[in-house]
Length: 67
Image (cartoon, rainbow, N blue to C red; front, side, top):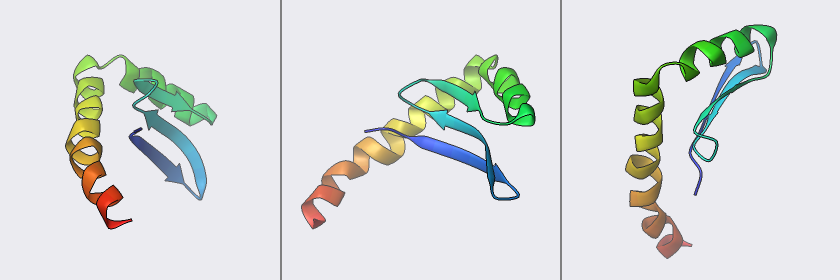
């Protein structure tokens, strides 16, 4: 299970958070700068990694049962 949060601007993927990497990855010049800033915030990274458990792990059984 992987939690991904992608941020787009003008239909271009600027930044993506991946729980398997545990950090943000920038795809544009602005996105790289944002990723560097957000990756230096340990509390933000911890909160986003916790969302994997909150959203994904609690609901995976429900999704698989319905399939």
